[in-house]
Length: 383
Image (cartoon, rainbow, N blue to C red; front, top):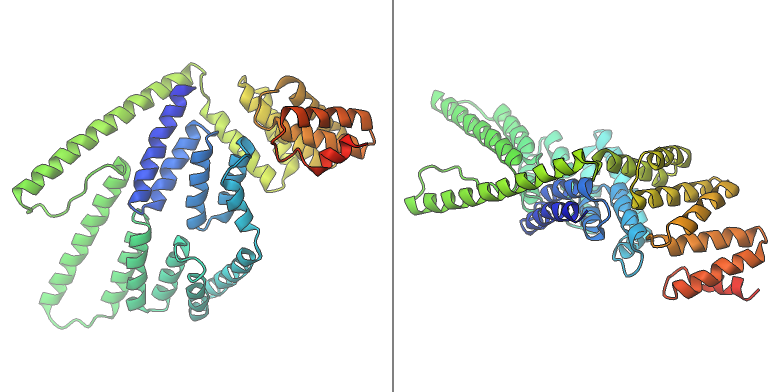
């Protein structure tokens, strides 16, 4: 397991390097690779949630922060992030955001621009808003403002793969309306298009090789600069080779059943069903995971979510069954205090006072600093 954690942190560190360069899209890609390897590190999950937040995928941000809290709910900054999503101010923002999208989809570009320009005052680092503004300006033929927002997007998300697409669209619009006076101008325009095409092709190569590849486009630079570039390139190849060695080790781990990447993806999908309130589908997926894994941590998570989903569906007997399994078999698991709390609450509602007090007393003794050791537990113990 330590090898997997170390492997995931290679991608985590690459993500941090991307963030230092304002490459949020690149950071997200690396963090997603990290979670595919190891899904239980709260630093990785929290940072991925932040990337999703600034990329305006608020549902996924909420998902990753909730996942982080499930692993550790004590002094976890993800709690503050989720609280922010629940504020009236953010809800008002989302209403305006959706209103702006309706205008955009209805081709009412001026109205959309007015709304999203106002939303940037709420948060000027929301990447998707810049993309929406670019689209709206391009569609309305305002190439000056479109170019301005492309430049802004290039600064706040340097690795955004849509930037080159927007640039090509902008160039296409400009060329469409540019008056053709001389044959010389046509040749120059053709040369520009060729250069842009070459730049796009080179960009794709860079994206395939990874964020550590050193890029250069001017082959006529001074000799000392070329030497420096070559040295950086050689360094990046060494780093890439090291990463490949780690990948080879990971593949061997998978073949030896030390790690099952498919199971991680299934777990993630099952949790998404739960957080999207599709409880029956979530239960089905987690039961499938439960029957196909030998990893105790994965089993504990599956049992917790099945119990929680059954509770949401009002199936208290089924919920109690899985809470009891968790309490008896997974005492050192991350959600143990919450499971004790939930089970005590169900028993209280069913007037099983003595058994409820027994579980509440256990929670108070074993987890005195838990947020679940609260006034409701004190009330049960006072009975």
